[in-house]
Length: 187
Image 1 (tube, helix red, strand yellow):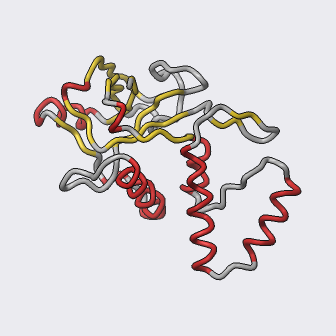
Image 2 (spheres, rainbow, N blue to C red):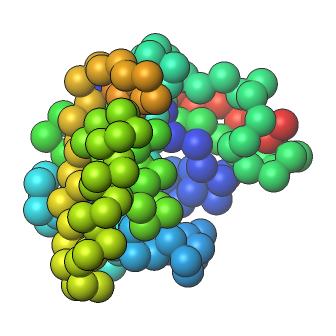
Image 3 (cartoon, rainbow, N blue to C red):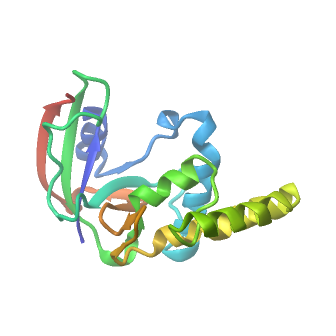
């Protein structure tokens, strides 16, 4: 599966030196660790066990703006302006990759319930139901709702477009996955 990951140059250096690169948990904000823990569990459950000494997956783009091609480095938002970065084009075995909807991932990151529909009237009904739940029941309801991020079929509603931006997660980059490399500065 062809994917593109944007990393710091140190990650590329590790890949070349060691023959592999695994994500560094130091870059994950403390407030977001619960979301990343949930996703890591999904990757381990749905795809394969994580390697020793690995906490979190490597993230990459599978599809951005409904196109499967390398990211546009002229765009802002990859890191603080002026930061040195590297984009790695990879060919990762399909059976090692978990795909999910990037936009829906924000619900997990922000610890929000992912509604079933874009209709606001349905949201109101669901919100009333959620307010009646205990803390444990609410946590479980959210986690069940988050599983919708793995449905990457393209669907369009008034408020959402699922399957347009698809991210890939896998446990490690191996040197043999590397197909191309671009160094750039964040805008």
